[in-house]
Amino acid sequence: MLGSLKADILLQAAMRTETQLIIDREALQPIGAFDANSPAEAFTGKVGSRQVVLVTHGRDPTHQCDRIGTISAATTCAAALARFSPKLIVNIGTCGGFLARGGSICDLHLPERVAFHDQRVPIPGFREFARGELNTHPVDALRAELGALGGTCSSGGSLDATPEDRAILDTLEARCKDMEAAAIAFVARDWRVPFIAVKCVTDLVDDPEAVQDAFLRNLRSATMRLATAASALLRSDYLPV
Ligand code: SAH
Image (cartoon, rainbow, N blue to C red; front, side):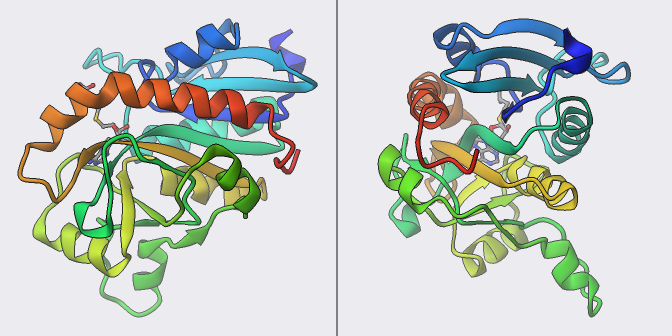
């Protein structure tokens, strides 16, 4: 079945924790590894008339943790595009929010734009390439249906943020900070597949509390909000597929 399985919607999440509720609620079936050179895992099922494939980045063979971050985001996305030929890619996951821009824990976002805040190349031409700003597929009606916010989601390789990162996040007026969305959007753009992101805030970047403490405390409630959003999204009349 795997060899010929095609997806209407590819849901991509970095962490297994972020997806277990979605897998359970939608009764998605495990189909295991889909790329011989990657620990990424896939699950599939029908939601209404749509064939859904959910992929997670899998566990790192050396460090035994989920393969969060931009590298595994890009490699997993490219492998899933090659294998499942999805018509739409949805990156679902948690993110940091910003008090300065009115953010709260568990806010849901469908960002209009993605970028990278930690890729800095001060050479003409490369500066904009490194910033990697891309618009997501327009989903105003879906955003309203889900009760979600818009804004910019900026990605980088770190959970924390240096002063340089913070300055760029402010310039971008970022409302979400994550470690995957812009990398997946980059691959989706090359493949000419529409891309959207669904992000739920687990922590606040500009709050004095350590990001990792808030993240771990709020992960479960954010995961529940993401699963509810995923169920609505997969059934929505406002998707481009
Ligand atoms: N410490 C966590 C590891 C994951 S945190 C654990 O032990 O489970 C990072 C993940 O959450 C990434 O996939 C990223 O996309 C998302 N994330 C949540 N808040 C973030 C923030 N403030 N900055 C960057 N990524 C964040």
